[in-house]
Image (cartoon, rainbow, N blue to C red):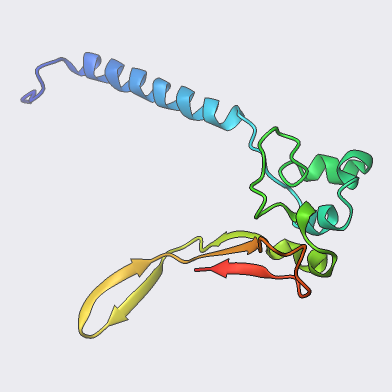
Length: 140
């Protein structure tokens, strides 16, 4: 059998072992770091309805870390559901950036196939508190 590598197979195996340990160690460290996110889909409506629930209700404070701003990460005012006018509080769940998880695929007879992604941004209007009719902005 002809050995095409300049090093022996045992050295090659050791290099692979070291590389796999480094990759495994790096990826396991990344999983340990906690993310500031909400774990209940009702968080936006709960906090918009009564922002004091972040301090007073255990269910809200434990599941709504991002919306309650418990992680120290500030929320951009255009996404902060605590600032929603009363008429919009029931649709607080809509405020945010919505992205498709999978790329769309387009097939047309005259052009090459392509994939695309979709994203919608729904934000609180700057004048939402002063307007007679409260507004949300959306962009694609």
